[in-house]
Length: 113
Image (tube, rainbow, N blue to C red; front, side):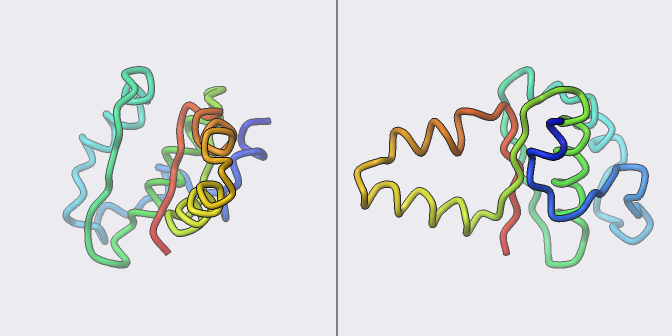
C-alpha cells in the first residue's frame, strides 16, 4: 500500500544497482542505509555526485525499501517540492502544506531534476 502512495516514477531496487558502473559508491555504505536505521534515527541522507552515477536509482531504491517495510514514504523532485512550498507560502498556507507534504511522511525521498 505505501509503495503505491509514494509516487515513485519507476521501481528501482538495491539488487539492481550496478556498483561496477558507479565506482565511487561504497557497497558497505549502501547496505548500512538499506537497514533503514537512518529513518529510525531521524537522520538525513544526501547523495552527492555527478549526473548519471545512480543517485536517483539509490533514492528510489531506499524509498521503495522503506515503503515495503511499512514506512510512509513520498518521492518527489526537489523542484516540485520547492514550487509547492513557495506557492503555499505565497497563499499563507505554509504550515498546512508542510504538514501535508512533508511532516505526514517518515521518509521524503527526492532528486533534483
